[in-house]
Image (cartoon, rainbow, N blue to C red; front, side, top):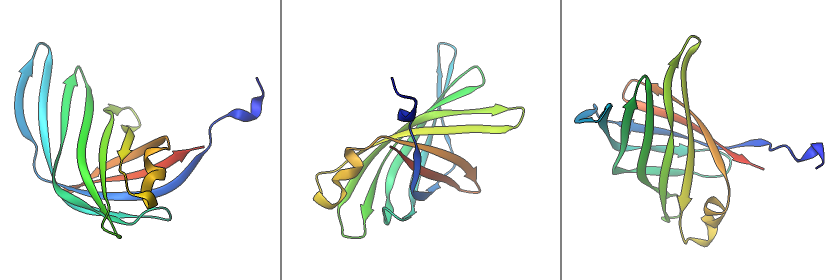
Length: 140
């Protein structure tokens, strides 16, 4: 296999996702479950401009010191098209800070945004006061 087939990341857009305080859902067997409401936000970048539609949420399940996150929400692009987002990943503390990485999947039937549903993405995230900032990269 040729060595030049390594994936390359290209910045596509960034999201500032507004969140409400987390809600404690409960404990499963060895797990803690939290829900974080998504209340809005903005998306800006070279490949997409949109708003985050209020009403989604992020379900966080803690096993040991690692949170498995699964955020589900909608974005409305500037042209009015709706884009469904399922964003899964992991959050954990490390000696160097916090590891917060995601792997989103987008769904839409809007022709102008179909590329989102046909592209692999990864993202880096940081939590700020009342927001999560996510940088989305295409994998080429």
